[in-house]
Image 1: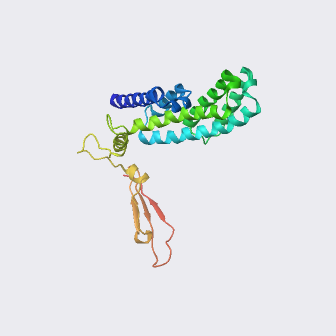
Image 2 (image 1 turned 120 degrees about the vertical axis):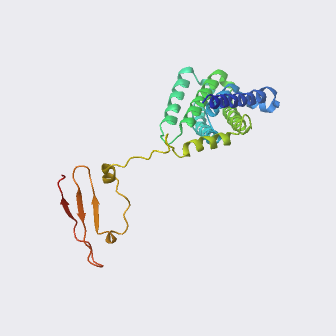
Image 3 (image 1 turned 90 degrees about the vertical axis):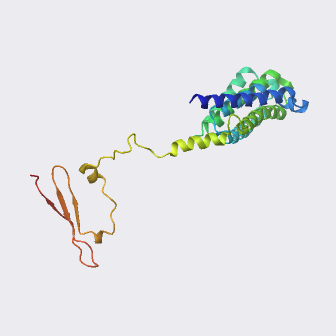
Length: 245
C-alpha cells in the first residue's frame, strides 16, 4: 500500500513541477495568460492525487466541463453588473447564486463541481480586486488558462514512465480484483448440506425428461412425483411426505 501512495506522491510532485516550470520559465505571452498559477496547482492536486490514468483523463474532461459552465454563468452577471461597480456584498451574492446553480444538478460529477467552485471564487474576487481594470473576456480567459494548465500537467505526469506507467498500475489493480479466489487449504472441499441442496437446486433440463425429483432434507424426506403424458403437459406435482425414522 505504501508503494501506491509513494507513486501517487511522486506523480503529484511531477505535475506541480510542470506547472511551476511553465509559469516561471514559459514564454512571456503564456505567462500573461496564466494570471492565477495557484489555481493551477490546486487543479493538479485535485486531479492527480490517488488517481490512475483513466481517472486523470476523465478528470481532464470534468475540468473542461466545469470551465464551460462557469463561463456561461459569469459572462451575463459581469455584463449586468460592471466590475467597476462590483462591491464585496454583490460579489458574495453572485458567488452564492453561482455555486447553487453548479451544485444543484445531480448528474454533474463531483470533480467538476470542485473545480467550478474554485473558478467562481476567483472570477468574482478578481473582479472586485481589479475593479475597472478588469476586462470581462480576458479575465475569464485567465481563469480558464490557469485551469487548463493544471489539467494538462496532470495528464502529462500520468504518462511519465516512472516509477511505472499509470496504465500498468491500473492493470495491476484489475488483476488483483479479477484473480480467482483460492481457499486456504486446497485439499478441503466446500461442504454441501441437504439444506444447501434444497435452497440451491441444480440446473434442470427439459422438465418433460425428468419424472421424479427427490429432495432429501435432514429431518423429513420429501418426494415430488411428476408424470408425463407424451407430448401433452405435465400432471400437477404430487407431494408425499414421509416421516423420518
